[in-house]
Length: 92
Image 1 (cartoon, rainbow, N blue to C red):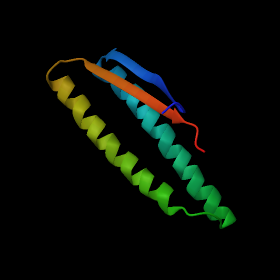
Image 2 (cartoon, rainbow, N blue to C red):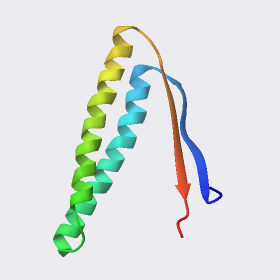
Image 3 (spheres, rainbow, N blue to C red):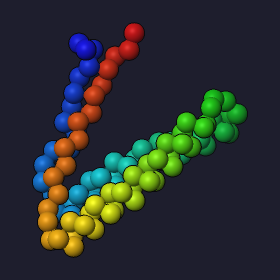
């Protein structure tokens, strides 16, 4: 896999509030991206919007899971460790 580059996008320990801000910012950014794709492709009547609509639903569900984990940490008065690695691959 010589075409793959890994980047540590998020790494460290956070308070629950900090973790929520970091994670929700990432998820919301992806949701906005897909909402724009749906709108843009719908307006121009081109492309398949099914993938973006599916990803929006998946990302909304991810927010629920994240919120649950954050609430668990709050109730136990614990910190949260996040390790978020992004793989970038140049395709042939």
